[in-house]
Image (tube, rainbow, N blue to C red):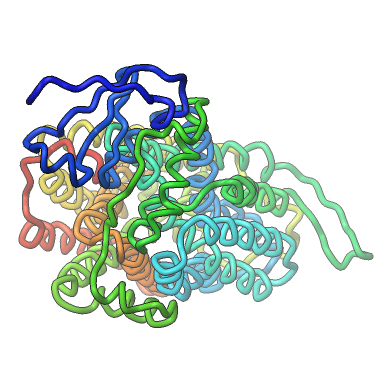
Length: 544
């Protein structure tokens, strides 16, 4: 490279005082290139890019500061919101079953209500997000979810509660898949693995915080009547109201966020994307927006279809159709099939745990196996609900289970660097299958230890499948792909929630046997269809 030529006029490039700056030819370029504008200005050791810059370079130049810290703070309640929504009802079922006169089949329907809402709307949410953007839809989704969750807590009948939980599922389905995509598109490669990992840890920590709230509230005997007794508020209803707080906080905070520049570039809106980068840079560094070193951006996606397609409705349809055509069709079926099996086997057990621990606690330490403990509690609801009590220990056991899952998720990101994503997922599902088949025959006192190991292993597999979808699909349909993957998983959860009480009415060991078979199928499919990778660093982010 030739010696750089000295110029004055740094003020025009950066807005700073008139100081010397260098005009450097880019590596591998000649003087003809500089005449075309392929030049880089160096001002006080800061490169000023005048050629078009790709997304990753532009994002890196925004730095890391207050803007990113705000997103990290937002990520905590946003990640907890979906965990609180899906897990809140199982916590209250031991006491709410009497107040609402629930049968085993009713409990299965209520557990599956929120997932029914999710699978009904997530397909639409994904397409809307890839068509209209992330930020506004995140705010709307979280706020709607908070409203419907509060409505469910005040419901005085099982059908009203079912309706509100269904609507809550419709609302949270979009933010659940969008928040991971949004966060990964707002952090540079240097920090992206950490933010994806932190989201998984936050979800697990949410599973630890929620049973702590349950311990403080649900066992308490408190009750208030409003509207002349039309609405009765008791401890478990207050717990459901507090479970809506993360969604409410997330909705308020996301209203102050900016649209993803990755999405804007994918839609060809370079001007607005550059303005977003300038804003991020200014907040992070405290410098004026005009000093942002990138002056022009390169379109991430610029196909003929996008140039010709100015209709949002046409884009909406094309986005959906692209997931079911070559070359993405095989990836769609792979991710959807795996998630159907994995989430079915995970949440059928997870949603049942508080009630299962309640059954085990009620036998008072008798040397019974798990199935015998279940049979001991299989009977009609008591007529006097005031005499129904729930021991705090069952929520402590759930908290220990969720804490173990959080620790396991943290460790798995390091284990995967050594053995790879494929081996970790296959071994995890094989061990989970063995645990499921052994659980009904072992002493009930071992249930908590088996549940800890089982949930940790299967949860790693579920997040691994989501990461696989992120890897396999391009930005233009990535949120849709994750939504489709989660939709298939939620179908599995709904079927599992409804089928569990039915199978238990025939035989206790039958649902455990089926769950074991599902885990085995996951291991076989992953072993024969998911390729191994030598990039263990990338895999550690995916499994997280």
